[in-house]
Length: 205
Length: 205
Image 1 (tube, rainbow over the protein chains, first blue to last red):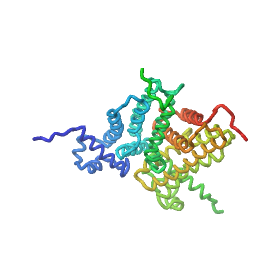
Image 2 (cartoon, rainbow over the protein chains, first blue to last red):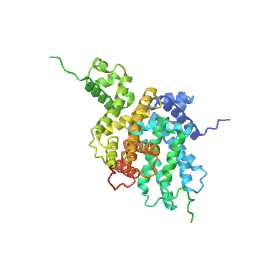
Image 3 (spheres, helix red, strand yellow):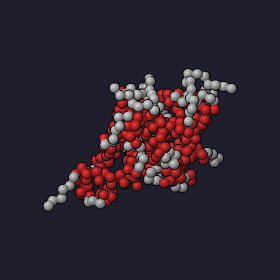
Image 4 (tube, rainbow over the protein chains, first blue to last red):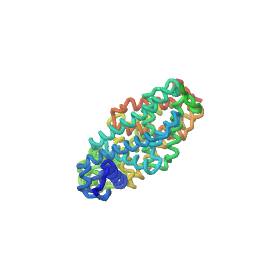
């Protein structure tokens, strides 16, 4: 009987091997050969999925944002925007080993974006996806009429996105400066400052 | 007559050559040989100042924070904390080619902090210096009695530091997402939110 192989699953296993190489040795160590070794497959098998290092890197970077999106898609949303925004941001912050891995891979890509045009494009793509996510959070606050009076959604989107990414950089490069639970508390307090009455229940019409 | 050589100046010229290599080819390209070539000096001359690549990298990273500190030390402070905090943060943000270079070098180091213990230590050191700078800004607001009522200086220090570093990452990796003047406006608006009456003159006793 022939083996049944799920190709998407195989690609993700290979990308996870690339993540391990990136976290252990850096982006420069990602070659089709190194990643095949790390994944425990032959170079030929890997090349069946990724012909070049560039294809592999692109898939590995996009998988970071894909994984975050998938987790967000499965969240048990409560309908309370304050709580739900907290849940969404918690999926971006490096609060456990899985998310820490994603954050480290993201930062490794960011650090190479200046010198590598392909990586710069990938960083832009992921930045755009995250920005759209933060814009949506602000839109929910405004539409549900719980945003602080006079809230400027565009400014608040950029401020929240920058705050979250800054905390990620601080925690990943210097964990003792801001612990995981403190990152989350800072974000929750910031989100509260965007809401008219943080203690009140959401308005439902 | 023997040539008079200013050793500190020479070391900085070599570190600037290392910065150019980092910005063009990445941190991995920094070797004593590459940097000697870039600086237009012999390997022997370079080794007179830096015996190893590690020493050179450490000096190059510390010079980023040293340059920022020097510029801050020369600022024409007005005594108006709101304006003066803006001046200080402007020296950290990549608002011109010089500061953009420093920001790119900082981000390249941050991206390698995960895989290289020496670079991690350097990142921590520079993080600590910046954190102390932000803590001082908040202290000035509190001491001059112009801080918003109930301001939590520790929380606001971490929030401001993360906001600024997040904006730096966004501008460096994705300049079209937040332009230089917009970064500055976001920071000024954020600082205004920390002040009791942003329009009023500072209290003097």
